[in-house]
Length: 453
Ligand SMILES: *Cc1c(COP(=O)(O)O)cnc(C)c1O
Image: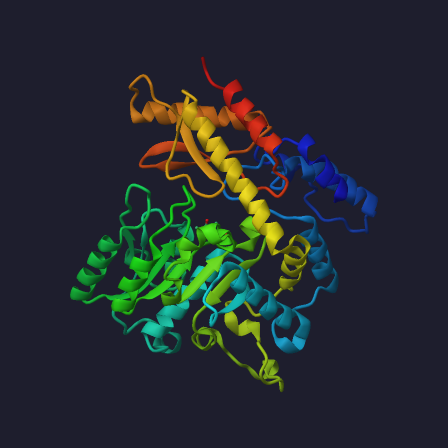
């Protein structure tokens, strides 16, 4: 594992595998007799490793990072060694109490409302589902848990046209129906337009729908656009609509005072999620979910059969804070990370990465071959080839797509893309734990080296 981290940059960031290559090189039947760890490990190195995308490579600039770090790996190894099933306080008091404490640490670090409570979920997708299920129960007086949604008026959820696919998935799973997810238009910065939200809520009310919840994007996945929280929260409060804040990636930046504006008005919301497993050096998975009203949350999920009854009082049984019964001891790696870095260390690392992104943006803007999507936010830069010849949007998209493929084919970097108002746009995330100035220089050279004449 240590070797891997040291030799990381020798690997192509994204493998050259063709579909089925790896599947075919693994026997169809499991071994009848035990195999030696030497053989198993040799196959790991020869079959598995060449087929991996190296997410911890400093030149992994795609999607959002899922960054890790030494303290995180050590914590995770201990979690695997203890292999405790931490469904409730009695099945591992230390896991429950460390979870409560680390969530309080995060709450303080990010400046979230002091009275809120946190729990660890596996992913932001699950956290958002948990939030919408809580909202559903609140709006139906816990009747949908009891009798199903059959007799209720139609509940509606609102989110921006740029919001993450996990919201649509949650709406489907919660039994609300995809058709009842209302997509609110965005402004020039790709942030939700609050007036459009209110129009939608008011007209839905007039038509007999029940506006149930708004999911606000604090940092969209495409371009890290930030929906305006305070005006949206005021609309939600006025119409008694549940407000969930999806800050999966950008939430980490709230440790920096200069980004606290994103959370202005958060005290009016009902829940908030961010992923330390994206941008806080804690390996996947660990999603931090915070709620204003933990009793409502527990009431939504609690089921108490005889075999789970315990005598302990005044303790937190996190099985009631979400969907699954069984829970991994996730808090341990987060505890290791926060202590090993120190809050100041986390802030310093974020600021360095954000500065790198600002520098890259300035460089791209100055270069005649590129144009940058603005506002550029945090450590993510969205850009495309500048148009000089009056090509059709389709032709421009094709050229940008080809440019992206060419860059990724080098194996030296891995970038992904998004569409901004229909235009194919490359995305660079400078969020890897091991990224340094040198890597940004290498990236610039690679961009120049792959331009067509
Ligand atoms: C990544 C992302 C998610 C989904 O995160 P998971 O933890 O993988 O479920 C949700 N919302 C936004 C804005 C994201 O960027």
